[in-house]
Image 1 (cartoon, rainbow, N blue to C red):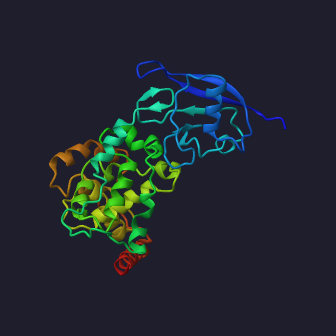
Image 2 (image 1 turned 180 degrees about the vertical axis):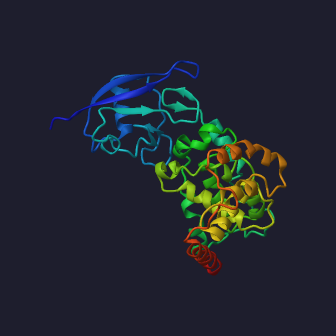
Image 3 (image 1 turned 30 degrees about the vertical axis):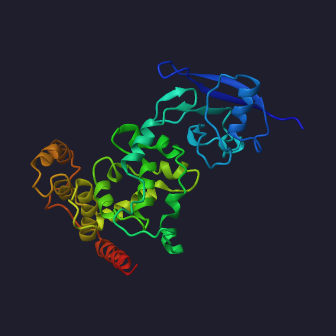
Length: 328
């Protein structure tokens, strides 16, 4: 059997300070049976021993070989070439993960990644509890609450594709928040209330842009965005927490849709950013935008606003959802 030729375009960078470039290699391989990691190893062993990349288990367990493959982060050992090369692709492009500095070629410095994980304190605390010296048993139902988040192998794929991490140094990242929920959902932890309050602060769940990229690339189906949403629900359900702008945004959106069927923008900004006229600095920050919207006819005057014809249905639906949450 004659194997097809596959062109591999590889990101090369000798050091942090060096300029990046791309180098092209050609290998013979069966795309249905050859993984991206197999291709890299083949190039390193047969053509260029200077290529730098991380690998270990080759079974999608350790997370070491995370990298960007044809514009999408994932595990090189998990992806066969045929999976990542579409019908229109003429080459296999392999690059280091984004949002982390490159050390060499495909190797990135994970320091920030680990530092952000540390910020959520992802360890079960039992300091205030009497723990058996043998076992602390969990029921299957209790374990199921944290199972998805517990699957995280900390490969970095989600962090690499995170839009919030790309523009904000303070955002801890989807990997950290998935681990944060894993601890929050653990019935053995004795610091749940403290954690909920912490994750309500800047840099945590409210900085997430909900781009869904983390869910799309997670190789072990942790679904980090879903875990972030679960933390948000815990925060919103706690009436004792100070109402942040993000919380007002969520509550106000629901209340306005419940009342009118859609959002009255003349009220929305004042309530959310201006805290109902209590935050003068916030009001001043949105005044220029509000004036431009009024002048361009993008915002109706209060006396011009009309409720949606579907307002009663929207209200009934929101109330039904709220009632269902109480039952469950």
